[in-house]
Length: 353
Image (cartoon, rainbow, N blue to C red; front, side, top):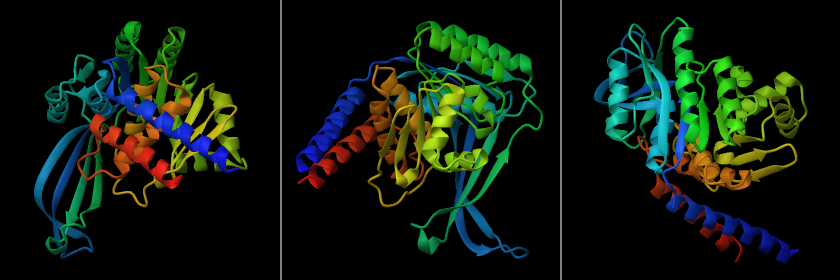
């Protein structure tokens, strides 16, 4: 019935307005963030010709940029929203590690939680972008180079990192585990952190690799991509995404699973419910930083006592800001997040007329 639909739309508009106030009035809450950090390097240039000996573009470099990425990228998003990001991560004692730490300091993010391993390489992810000079609006990713240590992280380093992070939970409002499977988060360390957070009533947000789901047991919510959920469904031999989500929630004792679908929207799964939040974008400009933005938004909402549905709605708005962002603007910030909430509320009201 029309009046029922009107009530549903109005409830969502009210939710968006409530979240807008939450973002605007966000206090500097403490977020304990544990995970793997990466130096993201972006190389830009002109790709006007092919290499003479292979069918690959020859790129004439015009600029190179370096940013703190992975868990450090999450810290940048938290800081941009006004939250106090306490990052616990591991870097190498090399130039890349120094650059990563320096970039964080320049943005006003504390680095006391960084563990420096003298003879270890910092993970560097290099993306090479190119365009023809005559088509400067069609810049595209040509190559990605992952340069990282070949040996495992020394256990003693990970253990010391966990001990430091555990101490910070005494006055934390939320815990984020950003796990890229580079050694900062271990099986034992993850369980110690999640158990301590649960014991203190602190919500935990996990962004895991599919091979590291055992390091998420007991988390408040876990982030997946839609393709990750589909891959898991096939591995488990289940009929639907809903069946897969509920199986994972039961097995790993999560309160919720958040599935990021890009322009297909976002799904919130709990043991009892499934909510789909559609995306209002026709296409994505880029997807770098999508998980990080969702984790930041979830942390912002849950640290203020918001419901999982409210937190998921804020995470979706954050994802839309990333999907529509220009290249090089992949860090979530308060202004664009507020604008995304306003735009979504306006579109819902217009579509209801």
